[in-house]
Amino acid sequence: MKTIGLIGGMSWESTAEYYRIINEAVKKRLGGLHSAKSVMYSLDFEEIEQLQTEGRWDEATDSMVDAAKRVEKAGADFVLICTNTMHKMAQEVEA
Image: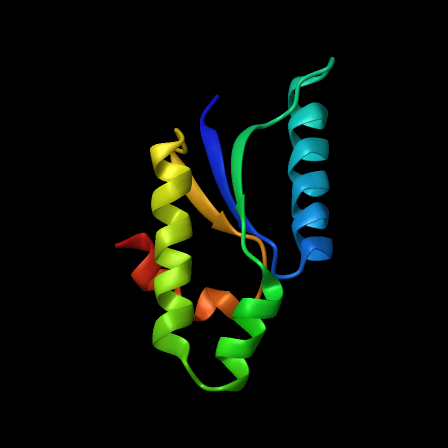
């Protein structure tokens, strides 16, 4: 099983929902007590929302790229952004 790198915290509620859905899908597919292998980095949404409000998208992107590097360093095989708006910088995070 590959390890999922989760970038969360934007909001923590959406992160929890992504986590729940992923693990329910793994359990349904594999049965038993299986759950997803994952590592998570949770950003402080207050900081991200402030950057968004002020139009400082480059800094928000830098935060996302840093989070992706952290989960990759922790062993993630790929990254999932647990929110909608921040997918705006998905290409930068992939790089």
